Length: 398
Image (cartoon, rainbow, N blue to C red):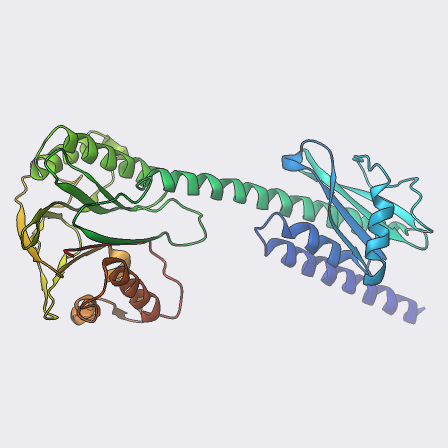
């Protein structure tokens, strides 16, 4: 009697551990295509000899076989052929279904989450399904369906975020006469949030001048994205109307403040570049943004923009342009704080002029090579992934 009780307790502990492990595995993926594979390999061979997971697109349309697993891998292909000849109805509850699949008893378990049917899990074994195995299969099915639904929702949100992020960046890389430029843009994280960093490069008018911007909106998500979109649209529109960059920033500041409670402050480096006989001239305004640096061919690096008021905070602001001459081969570097504030322990990358030291190593490189060198320096500065977006814009007088 005592031995029977001990065996029953041991079996109960085993199944509780099994369900806990299954939950951890299912919760550990946000890839919708991985969930069926994880489910099948969880139940085989513990609950059944084989498992076939059927799903449909977004829970709609006909079911299709997403993943098949058999305890004997050599039998997977022949089983797949047998399953191809049957029609799998989406059951509303776990049930033994009258399917002829070799000598197997087949159990169909619905994958239901939040009131929607996402698919069916077929289990096959050579003997009948005991009641406790049916209960465990039903439990696994609920957990699998919830994991599948969460993964699909995450994938949809990630796709929407990527689309929104792309809409806030230039649609393509323009050909800029007499200017060599390079850009790097990397949003942080796994596309969960729309970042607040952005850059732009566009023609200012018919006089041969081009304008550029690199900015960082406070925060992430839809609120930050709305300010980013407002900034890009305002900058381009006012440039087409012929406004000077100082006036453009005053108008942009007003537009951000008019957003009211939705407003987010914005740091921005905005400028206009014009080719000259000796290289090019840049007119810059740094509105609370990390310092812009000039690299000369001699290897000398210097700050070239005077810090001025950031945008979206003060209603009465004025701005003055800094004029920077870039001789042939000189480089202008602009970054967001995802570069300068990259952290390793208690140190930041730009402590003791770290960014200037990185830039000094880039003499003779093309603009894109400079941008990639700075990105590599950011990556190498700390072992863990960056928690902040970064944008890098390099302009070089060729």
